[in-house]
Image (cartoon, rainbow, N blue to C red; front, side):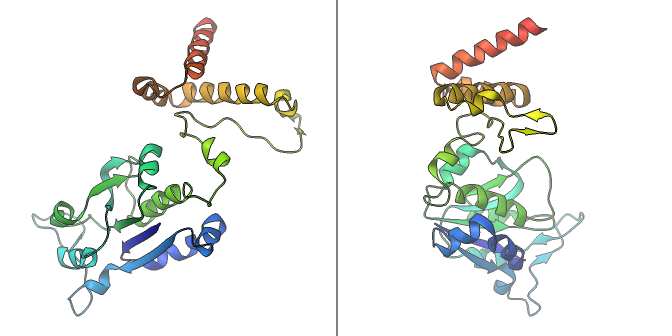
Length: 245
């Protein structure tokens, strides 16, 4: 897969791509990244890429000319990272991971001229209900989420048990030592009984999701994406919670 990132600050991404899993995956050519400086497409002699908004108001807006020219001939989908966009979900990440190339447009200041969004952008995506200084951090988060799903980047088993993959948050994790400062790893995780461990972890995932993100459970039930085992455990844990009140 190829990521083409249009940005005013291409250097922002370099340290991110130079470490950990992403560095190894990049070296193994499991994905590629093209960093495009929007200013390089400006026809202004000072490489100006922004101007004051019509109708007055604070801040600056990215101009249509360099944005349109930077996007010209690029692949699809073209995604504008924006707090106005649809919320990024794991379901959306899986969908994006099926593409051979994704173009990410990182705007700054007060955003991007709407004419560019209307004519040259396929979709606006937000990583959460808050505002960042620019789209670079959002682009890195989206890119990281997609790269993790690409074949060969992370083992299949690791990806499958992560939060949101089954419509549930991931269960608690522990490592050695078995006892630390008087706190113990649950005995069942040291039992070696694989089926009991699987069921325990599934129940912990459901319990955690019911407590911290009940909206995920509601959505999963509405979409009918849970197995009969998960549905039975949800009903069981809800009943236990009622009895405790």
